[in-house]
Image (cartoon, rainbow, N blue to C red; front, top):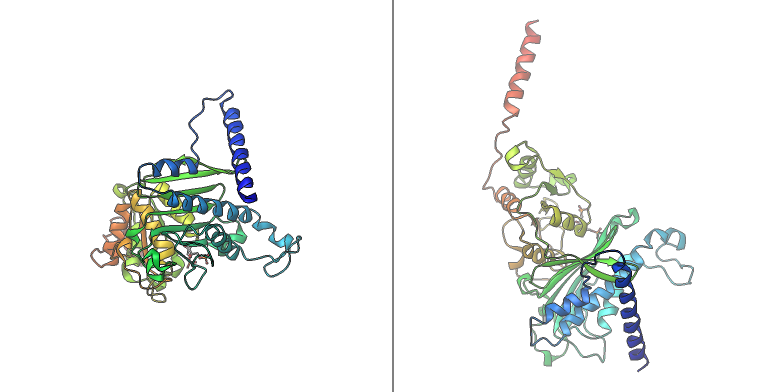
Length: 390
Ligand code: AFP
């Protein structure tokens, strides 16, 4: 009862704050319509008259968890002042690693309502079922709570990636099972990511296009800032960890060389951009166009990235934005998962770029002659000859 009263007061305060905010904005400015993520989700839900609201609630819980994580991420630089992992902070609480913290927050925020059948997290070895005594819902949530966390001490953008499926197991049999988690990516009903960067953005799709929201920290609301994101058919950026060049297979090596050749018609050479934080690399390429590759290597034959927690949700978003995502041979969303933490190579981004990369990977395409190179080499030979004559 008490919690309910608090929730009502909270909603009233939020309404008043939003009203004040809109009034401030309208003073002296033409106001564009402000759409919060909650409202956007409700509008999308209206398209399905039989919807019970459970799915919208789950998405709202994900948004709430993201706000909690963001609060901690922006304080990351204070860890040195407040104490490192394993030590006590000034409040006498143990300081946890941020990825562990993010994982706990997601499990708490979603688990609290029991609106899910089963969850899977990149940080947990096994599945997570609803707490004892809580009913289990009909949705499955898979997430990577803090992707790119090894970058966090350097203030580099990190992110949370999530995807939602409908359970396939019988609801009357109790909580969801591992089979509910091992569905093909094409079965996703929603996917999204939150990027904790210079601003915080949440980008999601329910199969009705891709929409981006930016957090306004003054009111704690995600506001629609990027409606119907579409990615260019061809970009000018390639993102791959070239430090592993010697471990790449020939196809990818040749593709990199192809991107570095000069050709006005195809805007080559491309620019290399690699942050090492998938959400940030993916988000930039989604907006500007280009390709991100984490290929199979001689050291890691299945690549590094996780099919369920990273590749599938980003592939769903990418396709919805008009892009393409494969493992170099197969569409990511068609891969039948066999285990929770399965890895996959990933080629993702602008459709034309990914198609060409696949052709190299599959050995169907060879490097064109560098038209500039041959005349340059001939000139060098002539120079050497004239030096010898002298
Ligand atoms: P961390 O979460 O350990 O930082 O890993 C991040 C990540 O999974 C993904 O975000 C990056 O794209 C990828 O690893 C970078 O891996 P490399 O360091 O091998 O390039």
